[in-house]
Image (cartoon, rainbow, N blue to C red; front, side):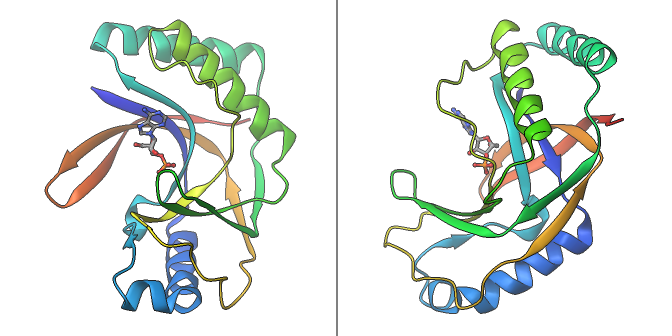
Length: 179
Ligand code: 3AM
């Protein structure tokens, strides 16, 4: 089972971001120069786990319970106000210019637990982001309007990722409330 920890976004935030994306990157969408991520798939990955057998995944979930019991993480708000582009994988993203320290710490701890459980060991620094477009093969134009979204988060979601003909779809399989 291919899984990852992420912040899910409230439905209104997904819609608002999709509306802004449509107007801010009209030429990309209209020109078919990149593949828009379906708004339903918007999320902020905290830690990619990858393929893990069910038993290991259950152990990992127990460790997240223990982590949040011993080192609680408060719910909060993240300001999404920066656009970035990674030419290597063609991802155009929206993220915070300033990541809340608690979120950064949570991602680091989840990445460590995922690695210890046999999942992916991530060496790259955590860059909080929401993928807006994939397969963007040209340097994207500057957005026509600056993003400014204050998004509340109050839980961690464990998603299962499925790849199909229509692209990826994500199924929430467990949630942890933040304190
Ligand atoms: O949409 P984003 O980038 O937030 O990029 C993948 C996606 O996150 C990332 O995990 C999320 C769900 O698929 N991902 C996929 N394969 C990965 C890998 N091998 C990966 N992240 C790190 N390493």
